[in-house]
Length: 72
Image (cartoon, rainbow, N blue to C red):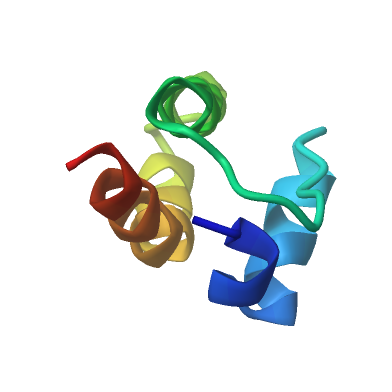
C-alpha cells in the first residue's frame, strides 16, 4: 500500500515530526510494523502525568489503524 496516498497531509507531518519520512512507494507488512513500532515508542516516551500519552495516542490512532490494514 502506498502510504503517501493513504495518509493526510496532517498525518504525514505528524510522522515527519517524530523522524519518520513517508515516501511515494508501496510499503510491505514489515515496513508498516516498523513504522507502527516507532510511533508507539514515541507515544510512550511522553509524560503520563500531564496527559501527553493520551493526546499522542489520539493523534496517531488513525495512522496506526492504516498501518494495521497493511499488515492484515
